[in-house]
Length: 181
Image 1 (cartoon, rainbow, N blue to C red):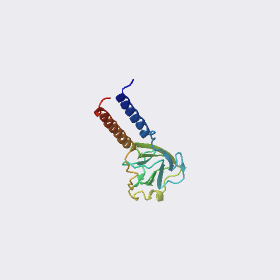
Image 2: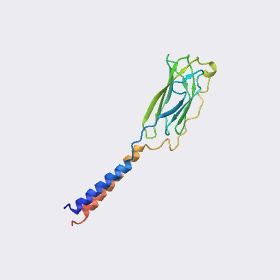
Image 3: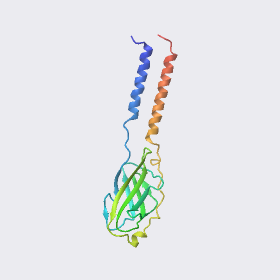
Image 4: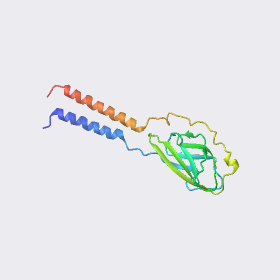
């Protein structure tokens, strides 16, 4: 027969492990780019003066989150990005000839991990002077909200595990302090 004390300790350990599994929940995936303007593979007659990226969850931006480069090495001027939840809008000043371009982007996902990617598009006509004198230098700084500056999920999981371990330690100490049966 198993002593009463061993049953209590094993019950406490089993309860702690069950709580850990329940509190941990499913692993969360990183956000993904849901759509962009210009779209992947788009062939454009006129150069865009603004870029929009839509993500599956709120994001924040690291330094220099957007770059647009032509095949011949020409770089577009990038304005100040604006973030609203999962939507990043950036004014740009296009430059260059009719060619393929790569829009490289970097964001910080809600869980704190860096996510990056590339959108490729083609200009079928050279950039006009009107498009080149666009308003990329304008724009307001990205607003910081509690949601976008939130604590990553892994921190909350760590806090929950630490709390659970504290409960286990207290339970074991209380069991040791009781008189033997």
